[in-house]
Image (cartoon, rainbow, N blue to C red; front, side, top):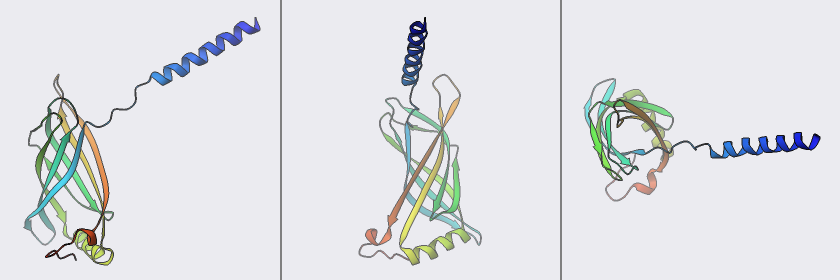
Length: 164
């Protein structure tokens, strides 16, 4: 009787471990976002309006219908501002598309960040995006994308480039 109970417990343990092994891993994001370009549009005392071009890359084997997005950029730990768009955009399967977003930068944060750049010459950046994508059956889902990196300005400056 003791052997039967042990055998049953062993099989139950194996079944539980097998079930855990079959659990699906969390899905990788099917969309990536990166900053491609920056141009300044307007400037007031408290904020600067810039247009940031984001490259959206579709890693899925079907077209992706983006219905809107929200992006936030931080430089050297300072949140510079947020940009949002409700413009629809089709990102082709296994391809990319550009999305221009008006961005409002806080001048005080920007001035502090530029001062730090002058001292360090290193830019730590973080891009946090929420991209809304249409579902095939209707409705939409949100994809959260986060990208961080570091840029050494001394390695990107070349002839004619002035780095603060």
